[in-house]
Image (cartoon, rainbow, N blue to C red; front, side, top):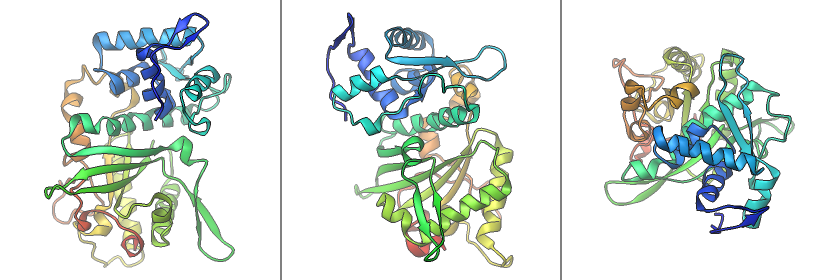
Length: 339
């Protein structure tokens, strides 16, 4: 964790606790953010808080600690996106941060790939929910997480034979600490996949099976060091995409044996979970969209019965929690649990 310095002068500009908090708690962890995302993470969404955040970000931009650019949507007014600069990286390193943990988009590269930018921003929407767990739930806290940007530098390598292997990378991996009814704290890992609806059925099934094989061979456990894991597939493209992912998952879990019975509450089914989440634009307006406010709270998403699974038996409306209390029947474990 970066050590807080109350004041650090640079060219006459003073980095006080407000600016330091934005750099250390927002951009050091999530790399690329909109003003609304910074506001949701650090303050109360909307209203005066958002205006204050926008003012602070603008000042950090003017002083060279942040780079900003309009999200290249090509449709109407584009939201501003902020990322760190070499100057803010150097500042955080002087405060004790490790250089390999700091990422920023080099100037001029920001518009190269709209899909990558949207992937990172919509991934961060979910990670913000996870980071707020301890503030909004009594028995759940995010202990640690690894971001897509970091994980892509250290892919899981899975050998299927002496000569053949493949790489697989989650979009994020989260470690939650959950206090059980018996006052025992367990660790639950969440392998997170953000699906933007632009992958074919073939690409989805390939990634899904790579995950299963990585689990069967123990590579996931060796990499992340946690034996209770669930796999969360979230999509900002709506419920239809959730249904498609559920169908494809059923097909892969059944394989060629279409008569195979998969228990809705068995481990094979319960460790793969699916949820449609708001789009980036909807998150930005969630404070005024009442139906979204009530549904997509931190508590509901993490420990509410909102998530779909592949097999539901006779109960088409079956919904489960992302973070269950930790019985082994409700989470995936290493080795044979991935069969």
